[in-house]
Length: 222
Length: 216
Image (cartoon, rainbow over all chains, first blue to last red; front, side):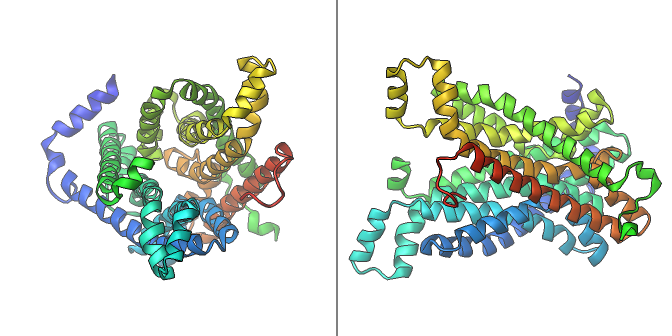
């Protein structure tokens, strides 16, 4: 298989491990973009999803917004933002956040709606405040699904952040885009492998987060 | 008004031509993904142990960026539409398999037993009982897959103008014409929303027993 051959050649070349175009630098940049975009998307999507899910109102509006956001082409949006706003972090962040908000928003809403109403009613009957019901009953039960929404958002960001390289940004996409123009397939395949590995690591992080954050009672029933 | 849709001649297409091209490149892979996902999902429903590994494989494939897919495929399929279509088919497969498995599994046990008692064989039971009940889930998958496929086609521009409407992005950058970039972005979004609306209509047609406006 020549793909495997490319991978080996890329990673054994020590020139790829140092300097501003080295793997550690690019990896760090990529992780930074991902965390930033995911953080913004979560800050927007989680509260809105939790509140609409808790009250059960606005589900249709939410679905509409999510479809509209999904319909926007991330790559085109990035180029458009680049032309309008010029060089900067915003042209990269806006498409990534637009990409990540729908899965977070919709899954959080769905997760809150799918919580068994019996314990929620019981908590209300015991005189818990609405905030208490939301945070101490619904949220822990909905957590596994909410995490899965965040996870798919994170993976999409990791894989889409590669196109940031087209508008002269860093990250692992640099290897893929540069390699493409230089007809250097070793670089392309190496970059792709790194992105895939980063995505797998993201899966691992979310798996661990689920282990730590989801209460044992919820995990057993799910 | 007609000047708005004038394109540079190196794109070798009219605007409507690009739209048609875009639809073809985006939707054929979704169809292929659905055709592959049907038997795979059925296997996963039958053999329960198969589902987790299949989910893992599809998740990993989903994690590979489309651009990387394109570039690796160039070696085998050249700078062609096929190079763009294969990754899109793989991505839609990732959406379809869980949707189909959940849909088919959501069929109540009693319904299946009733069908068996009425003398339905496995094939007939699958086609006439399980698939219709799973139809809303399938169409939900179809919506997500086709909308994201339409928006992903644009990336094909990077491998030598194989991105249909996305090709306008590069020309817009080269000739400093933001108009072309707007045409690309808005055109793609409108296309995706129209296809989504068509699928909602289709769902209303294939599931006449569902209450109107109840499902999203």
